[in-house]
Length: 528
Ligand code: NAP
Image (cartoon, rainbow, N blue to C red; front, side, top):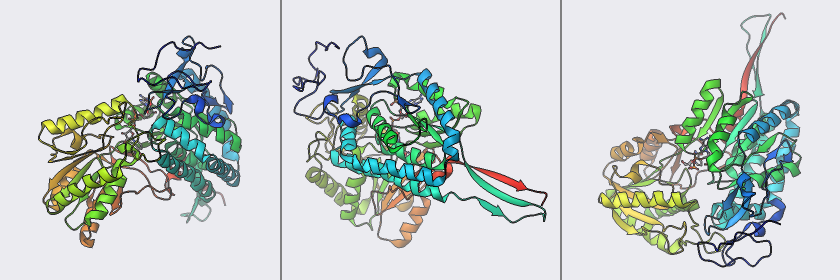
C-alpha cells in the first residue's frame, strides 16, 4: 500500500474526503485524480497497442514517484494523477512500434482507414463529457469551452476520415508516345508529433487525423501539463480498433522533454516532425530535422494584431474582441496580442470593451458554471502577464481595468485592459499568452499596417471595417496566415490553419492538411 504524504496542501484547503483521493484535493473546488472519469483515466505510455508497465499511477509513494511526474490542477494545485515519465528509451520503443505498424497501415484500404477514424470520432462524441472534464481538470479552461474543444477535436477525425478516401494522384500528358507519366501520393512514414497544453485534445487530432488518413503511423509527445487528454485519446483509439502501433503516446515531464524530443526528432526511422508550440522550441526541432532532412510541419507562436478602423461597427468589434481575446484566458496562439484602434473610434472602443469585460467575464474554477475565465496554466504564465503589465505601466501605459492577480489566488489573473500603449512595450513585441488587452491608438491605415507587419511572426490577424475597399486592401496586405474580417473566431476543420514568417511551416486541417503527410511520387511507365 502506498504511503501518503504527511503534508498539508500549501494552498490551505482540507484533504478531500473521498477514500481514494490523494492528498491536496480541495473538496469544494474541482477534481482530483480519484474523481476524474476512471474509464478514460490512463497514466502509462501507450506503445504498440499496450499500456507500458513501469509507473505507480495515482499513488503518492515517494519512492515510486521518481519514474512518474504529477499532473496538477492549474486552478487549485491539486494532484490529479501521476503519469509515467518517459525518456529516450521509451521514445525509441514507440518509434519502433510505429515503424513496425507502418506497412500494414499503409496497405490498408482508404475505406478501412476511414472507417476506423470515423469509429474513433464516434467514441469521442460518446465520451465527450468525460473528455471535457479531463481537459478542464488539467488545463483549467471552463467546462463549456472544454466541451467545445472536444467537439472541435473530434471533428478533425471526422473530417480526415472523409478526406482519407479523396487522396488523388495524377496522369500527366505524355511527352513520348511510348510512355505514360503518373503521379502517386504516398504516406510519408512515421511521424513524430509534439503538442502543447493549450488545446490538449484538438492539437493532437488535427495532426493525427491527417497523418492516419494519409497512411502514416505516429508517436505523440503531449505537453507535461496535459498528458491525461492525450492518454484518454489513446484509450479511445484502442477501443475504436486502430491497429497496435499506429497511434503511440509517450508522456514526459518538462525536464525530460529535450531528451525525448531529440530521440524522436533525430531518429532515422522518423520521416516527419509535426510540432505545435513556441517558435523557440520549433527552431530547436527544425535543427534536428535538418540533420536527416525530415519533412516538417510547424505551428508556432503568433502576435496577432486586432485592428479597429474608424469605419468599424464598434459593438461588433467589441463582441469579436471578447470572443477572440479571452477564450482559454487568452492562451491560444490566435488570441489577439494587441489592439490597434483608430483615433476616431478609440475612446468608444476602449470604454465599451472594458464595460463588456466587467459585465460578461467571470474568473473562477472551470467547473463552476458561471466561469468564463479559468486559471492560467502555471505560475510561469502568470509571471509573464505580470511582467508585461509592469513594463507597460512603467513606460506610460494607462490601466483601464484589471492589472493584477485575481482574488481567487493561485494562477488566476484579472482580465486586463491597458491604453496608451506604444510599440516599444513588451506587450506589443512578445506573445503575452494571457488575459491582457493592450490598446495602441493609431492615425492612418498605413500606420496600422506598418505596426502589424513589423512582427517577425504572422499567424492570425483581425480587423474590423465596414469599408469594402479597405477590407480588400487590408486583408491582402496583412502578413499573416489567417485573417478574421469582422470576425473574432476563425478556426474551422474545413479551413487551413497555419502561419507565415516565424509562425511556422505548412497548414493543418482542411484539404491542405493531408498533403503534409503525403509524398508525391512520379512514375514514368515506359516501353509501351
Ligand atoms: P513549448 O514550450 O514550445 O511546448 C510545446 C511542446 O513542446 C510541449 O509538448 C513541450 O513539452 C515540448 N517541448 C518543449 N521543449 C522541447 C524540446 N527541447 N524538445 C522537444 N519538445 C519540447 O510551447 P508552450 O509555451 O507550451 O505553448 C505555447 C506556444 O504554442 C505559444 O507560443 C503558442 O502561440 C503556440 N501555439 C501555436 C499554435 C499554432 O497552431 N500555431 C497552437 C497552439 C499553441 P513540455 O510541456 O514538457 O515542456
